Length: 332
Ligand SMILES: NC(=O)c1ccc[n+]([C@@H]2O[C@H](COP(=O)([O-])OP(=O)(O)OC[C@H]3O[C@@H](n4cnc5c(N)ncnc54)[C@H](OP(=O)(O)O)[C@@H]3O)[C@@H](O)[C@H]2O)c1
Image (cartoon, rainbow, N blue to C red; front, side, top):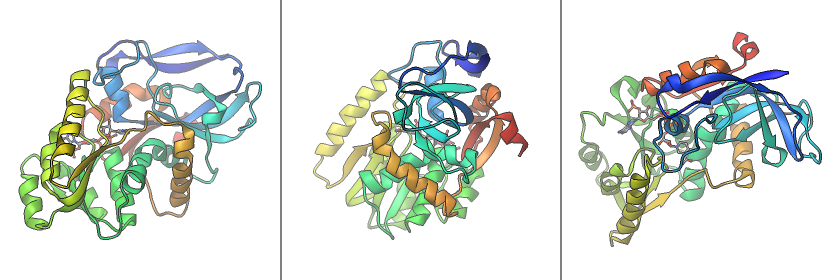
């Protein structure tokens, strides 16, 4: 039997994404074969395809940072999951496909009652803000924060989780997206036309407690400028090249040496395995089940239309998330 996947044949625009056919095989030792039902389309998929990262997979490669699906077959020695289980994984690559083979130990069970499109968004875009706000730093109700990149997939998750945590939030976003920030109680700032440092110094003369930066290191100086003494900037934006990565490291060291009582911290999911994330995913599944969070999904498309989904994300018009789904889920 054959199945389809969407391969980035070379570096470039969405047109390099091509559908290919593969032979379905039995899973190997310790592996589960999963029929994929939902995949989020995220900025890091685009970055890997375009070549905007210091460390890149060789082409051809399969993008797809996270998956949710049904276990379809298991290999020898698998005890963690069984055929028919609904599972998810943080894959980094390989999600743009009808099937994936994954180490059973690296899968998390997903409650059946959750909507698959919403649940799969939690695996990356909600994991980041949950860990940043509650592990990297420890926010408390009333803390004043700035979210840089507040309207995107990760940014809107920051807004929802920040509201739950009782934060006073400011967010940078394009004006057409300000309503979504206001919907979650955040004060939007148009970074295209407003000087956010001036705006925040006027609004919060004592300074902010935290800045969450999903963009580049070019925001370090101004981000630090709006913090109070003792405040922290957490950077989670992916570096665009090796040179930018090295610049980032140098800036990290230098800014942290300044005797101003302010700190920069870094965050990335790439180094982790499931043991680092499972607790957070379960907490997020529970918050979704209780209706306390609800991912914003602007578009749902068939998995095989990953190219169109990438075009949409790259247009810069998307608020929140885009999710790829199997045809039967799209009909619901
Ligand atoms: N460390 C990790 O493990 C990890 C995990 C996930 C994501 N990330 C990183 O998080 C970042 C955001 O990802 P995402 O999936 O949320 O992306 P996204 O959905 O594409 O959203 C990013 C948003 O940033 C805004 N933006 C673009 N240029 C900007 C600028 N110069 N200044 C301020 N805002 C700008 C855009 O909205 P406006 O039109 O409103 O400006 C855009 O919608 C990326 O750098 C990604 O690599 C890191």
